[in-house]
Length: 172
Ligand code: S3P
Image 1 (cartoon, rainbow, N blue to C red):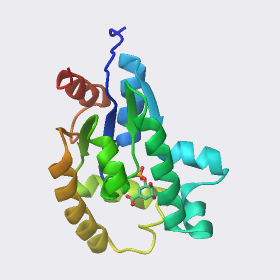
Image 2 (cartoon, helix red, strand yellow):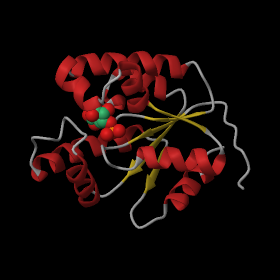
Image 3 (cartoon, rainbow, N blue to C red):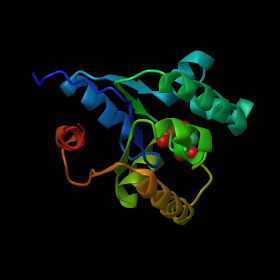
Image 4 (cartoon, helix red, strand yellow):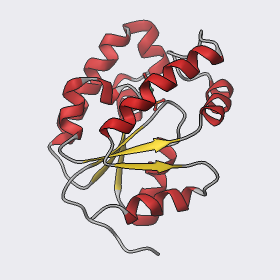
């Protein structure tokens, strides 16, 4: 069993949809006994419906509003791993909150992301997009994620435990 870690700031996992933020959060929680909060899951639970249904029934702005409210609450706490929706850091208020902690960009190749998101059908923003359109969106966002990150962790070809270990090695 790995040693329990304690940090006096939050660690925010950012990256494109399907990049493995939730999986990394789960691994950090299991191996290093860190408390993890997956913002999409918290919002789904509070609203009693999936992110997909929130987008189609209440709209994207409503979702973003709920996400900001949640980020404000989480920003008041410490030592959390916060697995964020892909759009979260693009909202200035969220980014301000994240900057008070450490931002980890979970970097995964677009080929792998496309395989995952095509298989699942849980991402409202990607449903009606071609692979080329998704790749374009990925390219734009990747620059933002890289820009704001304190730590960049590449997941390609690595086990989930190795990815988690690389994050921990870079935190202090
Ligand atoms: C979004 C990412 C999703 C979810 C929503 C919007 C985005 O989260 O918050 O569908 O615009 O990138 P994941 O990154 O966890 O899929």
